[in-house]
Image 1 (cartoon, rainbow, N blue to C red):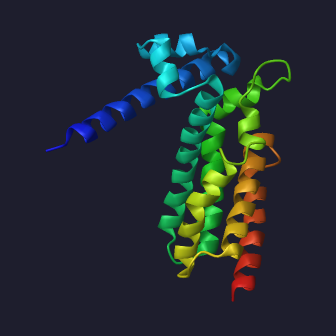
Image 2 (cartoon, rainbow, N blue to C red):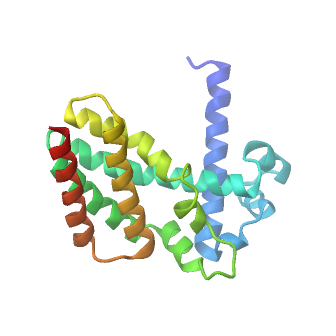
Length: 199
């Protein structure tokens, strides 16, 4: 039987999901500049003050939205690493291919990239210029996973390797720097260099 505390936590998580879903829907249909706290609150069926109490400012709402989307991308990477538990080269290259394909289909990422015209408000800086929202979040999540694949504790080299992979993915996903095969080739070079250094 769940406690009152866990029930409240479940309800709070459900509310947060509704709020982020509302912000995502508005962003994908009309752009981030159309997202107002009033519009999000109305779409989620709560008061604007309740939204402020739960999320904070619009900037914090953007951070939370991008962080949640980042977790979805991380889950794609983890799925491929788990599918190749004893082969970092195969796992990392499959992960990069899968996550870039996922990004190409991701409606929020498409909306963020297409809205960045330099004139309207944009979420793009959260992806590219605010390291704690995407880069550090991904590196923190994936470093122990990569270390586990190699059967060793995470160290500075492992973190630097994961940071390099994350930067490669962000670059290809946000700047369209070439076909996915190019990113896979770059990933293979990075992995092989890392493995050679780790021996």
